[in-house]
Picture 1 (cartoon, rainbow, N blue to C red):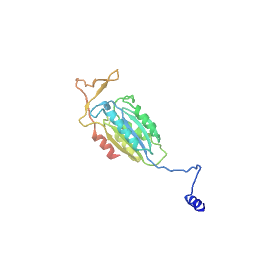
Picture 2: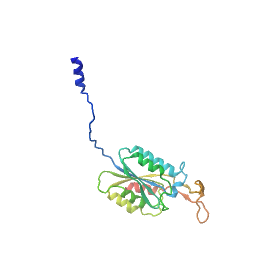
Picture 3: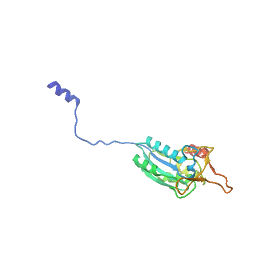
Picture 4: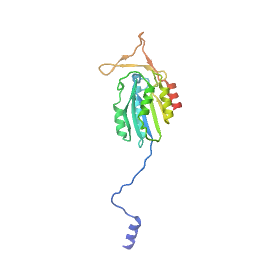
Amino acid sequence: AAMFFLVVTLARPQWGRYAEPVTRRGIDVVIILDVSDSMRAEDVTPDRMTRARALAADLVGRLEGNRIGLVAAAGSAYVQCPLTLDISAVRLFLDILEIGDVPDAGSDLGAALRVGLDAFPQDTGGRRVIVLISDGEDHEGAAEGALAEAVEAGVVIYTVGVGTPAGGPLPLPSREGGMGGYKKDARGRVVTTRMNPEVLASLAEAG
């Protein structure tokens, strides 16, 4: 009996509950997702938007433990989901994000980057990252100013290109929800939309 209780004592059994503070240090990541009309193109399977959403979802799954935010971008941009540790919430907002959710048509990467920068708290330090998932089309050409602001703020920018340099025709949605043909120019020629890897590479290299 003495030997038994000696073994139990050496094992240091414990019971009950107690609180122990845990310090976790992560990074803040804002994912900017291009939802402009050009993301309807089907030069990647099944289309650019579906592929971009899948890439974003995979990234979110790998970033558990870090704060993640989501920005929707086209001719303007807005914060779809503020920075949060709740991965389920980010995935929910990502699942419901569609082309056309941003009312302003076109593609303005400068506006997207500025909204992404504003999504970070101004009074906190730590590493901050923007991940831009886009085909690289930029109708406004005003990304350089926003890029300079990001560099000055110490925000790192990564870009993920969706689409192909050869591109493809731009599908038009029908009123019934399907495809209603392809967009044409004033001469009746089918408009081709192409991924612009040069723009995305320059943003990533500078940022």
